[in-house]
Length: 242
Image (cartoon, rainbow, N blue to C red):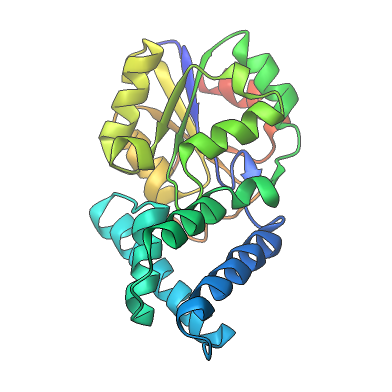
């Protein structure tokens, strides 16, 4: 059956998560330290970093084992608990905002060739995004895409913080298909991780394209239906897939 719709992962597929990551993280940690010292003046940066790492471990466990992602508010509550702090609502709300908007303060670079390829693809396919989120929720990623003029190309968005489940849960792909008006056999998903993007797409009945232009997944399985090394080669890859 002819492919009519494409879904894309966001992190390390549309953008390189490594770029500006140090700037984002430092801004978040600086703010976190200021808030913590309001309650515990003797707190060191290392204590705060350790609590932050604990929150990241919690995220990783839920993401990999439960196929859902806790949002920034839940993760920051975890930081307060790790530090033994009873933080008031105003400080908590402000911290959540700083963490969520960090990707706008230190935006990642978009993958080479993405913008022109999206313009090409949008004329031929219906496009959607399926993304697992951590500190950067769907509403902020939309703002980032709007700033770069790329939001216009997408008709469907399945962000894990908004739907309550994450890849490889087949519901993520099914929901995108409903929004795009396409059956699983009329869709292909493009992402950089075999465990979530390839396995999830194939389990849901989609074709899976492994993107290697930003990040090389070290695992050997599952095997994708195609490999995309550069965004500029997407027309060729889709043609070869039939």
